[in-house]
Length: 420
Image (tube, rainbow, N blue to C red; front, side, top):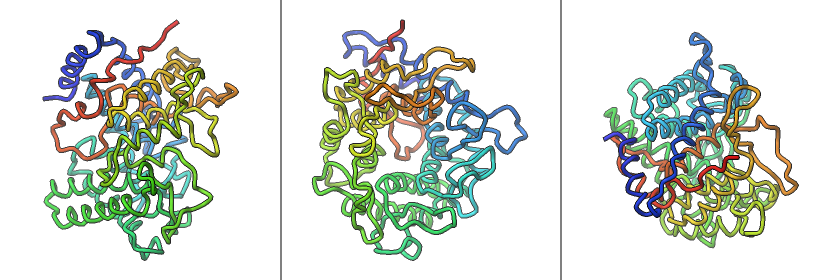
């Protein structure tokens, strides 16, 4: 059964629990943000090496970030499932074709491209892992298996103590710098993404009959999970340390709290010894505005140290992915209500003839960045939360009723957009 049919059935079921009322604009909102992502995709010249690239914001592909392309692919696939419109998945597939073309020789992806040219020669591990997860969400492809295998090889090289230096703690380092040198620091977010990416690669290897690599990828993923449970888990057990150095020591200059501090829960890594609802409470207590007299009530801040005054729709949606899993739907509702009524959502046609997207943040003075700071990954995260949540783990096809476990029944249709 197609996931869009399942989603429609869940909508009908959920209406019984929401005083008989499901707001009609849920699908409209998903389509709005899906269309915004498509407006950022380059399709003007099918012969160009940049064909299919999704710019980070509206405009020509001069700011193409592989990780954000990957998240956009995930959002487009979900939009296609929910709306029953194959266009979104077709365009997601074009973006994946572009990413396969620009993969680095070592199997990773560079941090930024302009059209198909390398614009930033750093290779942050996150980008490679996110692309692997996105490929998996599009479904196994024999034609892309070598690309997936090369990417897994890059992750394994970042796990190798010979390359990353320091202790053999099972964690991956942060990738490579612009000179090709491996990073030695271990970031919680990189490791959470890498776990799911390697599990996806293992699934593809199994489908391909490549049992040796399948076992290798699973073994490496489980080492990462152990590191997340021991080295990186904070003593309180309700969040994670953002980053440690090669000796597994906390990097004092980076010892602040933000979305990285809950990345394993957001990315559905099956860590043991952690109560997910405690992580949800930690997010609420540390990063969410709790003053119900504040115009920012419910919003998530960037972090608790450098930019505690910046309120972000994107970070709000990322936190919601945890709360939808834990059933802490009131926290999620407050975050979504703030976002849709914040004035940051561009729901009217602008001077470029497009609408959709979210201005990146607002601070305590009411200041915001320029109107064009409307990033594609924020739109994708919004699609995920409006459709009830998201599971980043590889899922055997056909897709199943995963939405039931992600808080859908508590939130479908909530936060109807206010229109003047």
